Amino acid sequence: MPERAIAHIVIASDHAGFTLKTHIAEHIRARGLPVEDLGPSDETSCDYSDFAHRVAERVAAGAGTAGVLVCGTGIGMSMAANRHEGVRAALCSEPYSARMSREHNDANVLCVGARVIGVALAEAVVDAFLEGAFEGGRHARRVAKIEP
Image 1 (tube, rainbow, N blue to C red):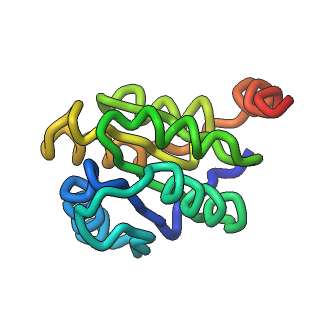
Image 2 (image 1 turned 90 degrees about the vertical axis):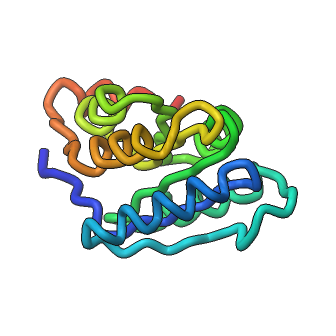
C-alpha cells in the first residue's frame, strides 16, 4: 500500500490547549509543513468539541490532510474527532505510540493533552507522528475493520 504522505496540517484546541497549540503550530511550520489554525484565537473559555469537529471534518474531506488537536487531557478531543467517518484520532502522550498510530493504525489526527505533557515532549510526539508512515499490509486489513 502506498504511503499516505501528510501535505497539510489543520490544528485546533480549546482554551486549555491554546498555548501548546500555538507552539506546536510553529514547530510544524519550522519543519516545512503548512499549518492551518482553525481556532480558537485566544484563551477565552470554549467547548473542545466545536474545534474537534472542525478539524475532523477537514481531515475527512481532504487527502493528504492530517490534524492535531490539543485540549487539557486530549481525551475529549479524541472522542469527538473519532465520531467522524474516516477519522482515526489517536491520543498520544509519548513518541512511540504516536509513531505506531501512523504506522499500524493509519491515524490521521493526533490528540495531545496540554495538562499532561510539556512542550519538549509534545514536540517529540508531533515529530514521531509526522515521521510515521502507514505500513499497509496486514495493518490495512485491520484498519478497514475499524468502521462498523
